[in-house]
Image (tube, rainbow, N blue to C red; front, top):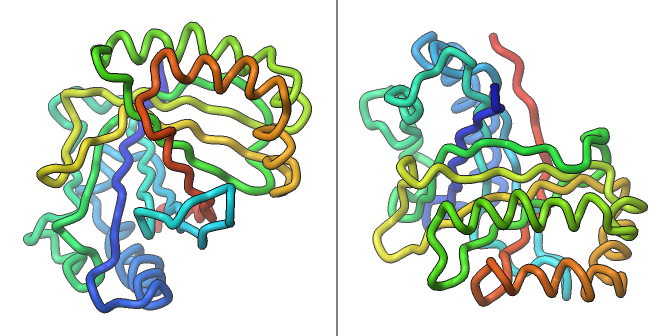
Length: 236
């Protein structure tokens, strides 16, 4: 059975500092959520991806302050996939104290492991949108069958990347703020260091093979990148 995850992209409430957002999200909110049995009726794991500052010429100014990553339980059926709404006002979880509800993207995605190595070092999320004229199914097919195979045999990524996982969005689960074009997937990369990430993306074989293929299925501008700190929370 495919691994299924729910992602929610969070922007901090206007006027709130990054530090205050991270504190509210990672302390009180997480404790209340993880003590909620309704949440665990469909979740098997909970991670916070805390977005780190931009790095010149590598990661742009981030659009988001955090990305929620929920591992859904195997027993979860299609009608239950969006059971947990992080903006529900009746959940008693107080998201409105630190999250901007006017900026949000959420979807469920199926994971495909392409490079099956350790989740070690630094984590980078790349957020592709499909090329104009492609259906979600066409995008996902190329992403999985063509691009994934190219990454798996690319010399630079085999040398420098520890792990690469594709997440294919289920279009029927997408929620997005009005006017925002949602993502069609998430590419998750792990490297031992930022230097290794630089080396992979700067390699001639990346430009000749992978960057060239991205133009066949990824829209313009290129995918937004986020450097994140992953925090795994155990069930209380």
